[in-house]
Image (cartoon, rainbow, N blue to C red; front, side):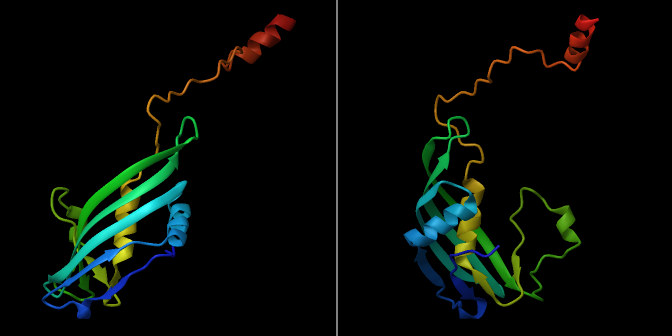
Length: 171
């Protein structure tokens, strides 16, 4: 999937001082991201990121906040919510001794830190990490407060034997 918002950083550009940046897509990109995330609208998104050296790769500390509008699953009315989150991601170049071993991935400890991402090209997308973590926080079934689903009343019998019952009355 191609994303309309990217902020590429090369691993070899990260100095000992690190890199600090604030990212915020414009309204056109927010509209494209909303379509991609299958929400009504993305009214605001901002992230503060600090990238530091980590062994032969990089460590990204991110904080983000967003304002999204989704359709209520009961009423289909727009429902606005504010989301925020933090994340830490590590990236290493291909061939790094710190890259995860494919055999050890089947034995991951759910309480441990995530293994580092491996960059085949020596670069990574900061905006992509922000979008990924935003997508994880979006409620897949948003419901307005007090909205309750009431199934329509069906006066007909829905049993598979209802058809047999109708046939029996005719005889």
